[in-house]
Image (tube, rainbow, N blue to C red; front, top):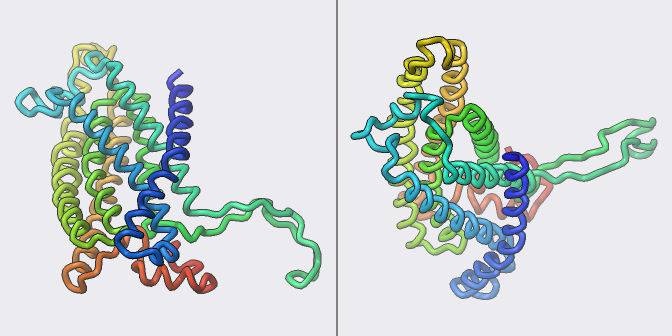
Amino acid sequence: EAFAVLFLLTFLIRAIKKKFLPIFSAYGRQLGRKAHGPSWEKTNEERIQKFGEYVYRLHFHSMISLYGVWYFWGKEWWDPSKGGTTHLFAGFPYSHQVEPGMAWYYLVQAAYNLDALITIMEISFVFQLRSPIVLPGKESASLKLQSPLSVDWSPTCRGDFQEMFVHHIITNILIIASSYLHFTRIGSMVFLVHDLSDVPIDISKLANFVKWKKTTIVSFITLLITWIVTRLVIFPFYIYRSVLFETHLVLLTKEALAGTGVTVLQYYCYKFIFVVLIGALLVLHVVWFFLLVRILLLLALKGETQDLSEHKNGEKDHLEGMSTPSESNGKKEQ
């Protein structure tokens, strides 16, 4: 039943996106035209489309963050005075009943992240069906067989495609593993710190897409502060620390000590899964932080507001590459 609901929610999210993205993009077109004149939109169609995407993301991250803060406010695993992160593992699984609010939170997050994985594939690759047989001609003197599916890089591929793709794969595995193993408390903490820091990311990207420099600077500084607090302090020193040093608490329940609860083998399997997956996310957080520092240096030294996560070599190089497609292949997509 859970998988059926997940696929229905994913379908619903994609339907909502299809309905509202053109509306959001049209709003971005109006803002850009108002700020930079009618000629701006002729050379910024890609930016206009991405503006719509990030307006949608901003709505989702804002709403899910508000729900998360409201729902988890006062939960014992977020409150050090009540035992804090020890409640992620103490009493597992008997005192870790999944409430309806947690179940729906997980399902919506799972559907959003599944859609995000599908979307990054759609914007990064161009898939074309072709004949599996190549007849003799200019390219080949003899009959040849080839794959019936051609896959090429898309010009809309993100500059940080590799990091984002790995992030989405890890996130979806973590969702499935934590849900199946009933470790939803730790999964919900990972969701919340990401969502909270995604809000200023979306705002800064929106400001940069329409080239509002002052707004971009303010939102980018807010992004850096939020990123450090959530992803480089709370995530490693509160959540990951618990995974490293408190998972043994699953072995201290009455049931485990009596031999009817979590076994030692299960414990090591659980710990390995979360140490690897959450540790991989932490590495990506650090990688992205250095990318943010590069953007900050460009801003401070050159006064340029360039989003290197969208175009790894900068927006100017990306625009030049788009004007000469033969030169741009393999340049931005790596």
